[in-house]
Length: 145
Image (cartoon, rainbow, N blue to C red; front, side, top):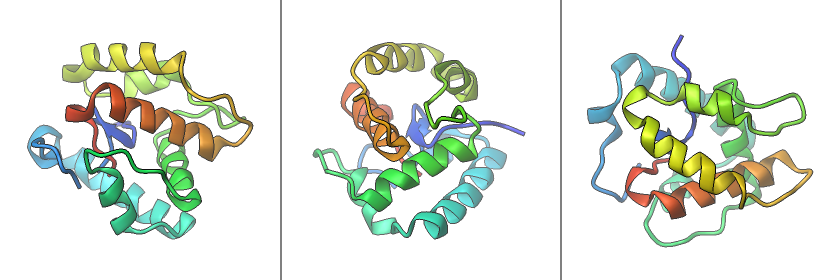
């Protein structure tokens, strides 16, 4: 099974309804898009966030994420098996989850964001911090599904 992050369309993706010129449906394999759709449904139900909140976060301007949206981001990481038991993001797993054509972008983002992600005991806040950084570093490749 393909692994992918929410996130963040490095696609990686982030995984998402974009305000940028990139359409995930043209860049990702159909089986990955189906998987992302299923993860999206599960995480929406689990966190109580909405498609509107996700779409708003995907807009180019900075947006503070609600608690529900932050936990949605963490849920998507979890669904992609890129978190450790303590909720910390495993950067090696993230890198391997990203489609190969995005490796150079992924390395740039992972390197830059790893040192700037806010320290927090809360896995939802940490997931949001990663997404926020990824969106700032590579906005043209960020898409939260």
